[in-house]
Image (cartoon, rainbow, N blue to C red; front, top):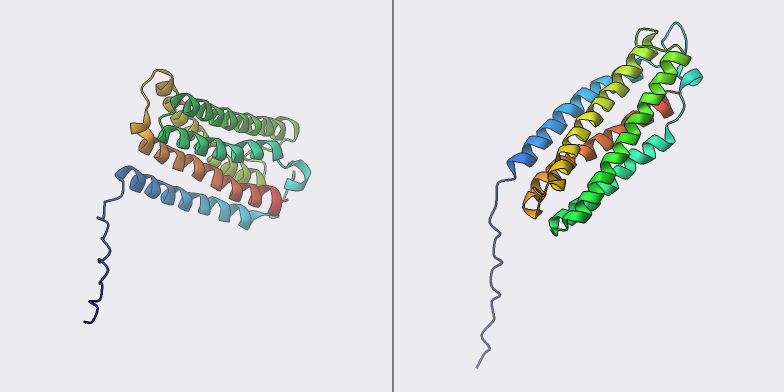
Length: 199
């Protein structure tokens, strides 16, 4: 008798689910904001070296290494916070979330200190020359996004402290974290263009 061939079961197709509306909305927001940043970055690059009067980037800009490390580190802390909320470890989530806020605040304070030096010690304002105009526009645009992100992170922390956050909210928290990762990624571009290529 010939053996009957065994036919393996057909693989079960996984049902397709619509992506989260929140994620789609955040991706659309990030796409739109990226387009705005591209315009500002292109303008900055186009006007490099075209200022008719000083000061120039080489004369006044210092590379903000510490501030940048803080901001880049905040992407790590927010990822750790996301992992903890998924497993309903609320206390650990809150600590890493708060660490993200602190790192973001340090970055903002550093930006403010840099602007204070540039304006009051070096005499560089938004109307001084093309460098001043494009510098404050681009770096200021990024700083405004950091502020918006910190407001959102602070609201989540307030809800966490008052006991209104648990693992059911992990999806929403991950969506907000996407925005923060976007802010960090944009700083890579701004840092490279302004403080590396522009000097």
